[in-house]
Amino acid sequence: MQITWYGMSCFEIVALRAKGEHVTILIDPLDEAVTGIKMPKVAADIVLCSNNDYVSKDLKKINGAFLVDHPGEYEIKGVYIQGVASLPEAKKPAEEPEKGGKAMPSRKASAGEGKNKETEAAVIPGTIFAIEVEDMQLCHLGNLQQSELAEDQITKIGNVDILMCPVGIGDGLGAKEALKVMSQIEPSVAIPMNYKIPQAKMELAALEEFTKEAGLGKIEPLPKLVIKKKDINPEESKIVVLTQ
Image: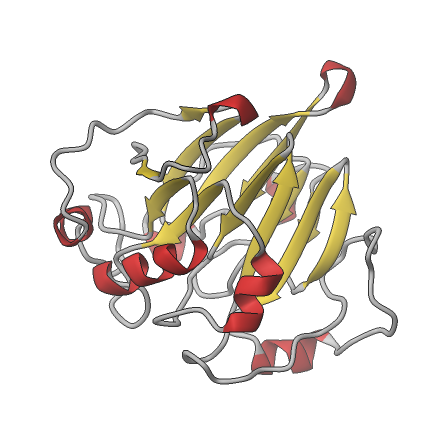
């Protein structure tokens, strides 16, 4: 698996499927007008959109991609995805739709049709994505505004090998809150996101605030993370910083 970061909460994940085929997952393609960050052209199979704050859903630029932008359970091209609703604020209950987005139902799809998009947009500020691919469990927290996760969210997310976590959001996950959420999820690998970079128009905290709070020394950023299941050590937890 290869994970590349394009700024904010945007990642490209290229994973191996059966028979040597690959599947490309693009998470949170960025709206350049809002973020100031120009998106490269990505030939994605699946596009996940966690929020409407700064994410572009212009699939004309991503030919043939399958869009998932709401909570629910999905199976697409051998990738299992669990979309979990974010809450407006920590510990505040919110009803989660049983289905959403434009995806096919998964092997565990719930009965019933859930809410329509207009209603969902009114109650769900964002979506957390748990992704199972290449026998690894990934979690992308999106533009999370909670200071900690609720117990039912943690249960739905499940065990996590690789976590993509905001660390510089002033009204949501800053450094202290990010560490709290990481301790709730206990991933083997945590990748910081949503922190200040030169191109970004949005007001975000510097990565150094998070690394200082975490008691880390200087971290050498990687251009991309290349990882296999055998590289995951459940007894070890580490933070990997990627360059944009």
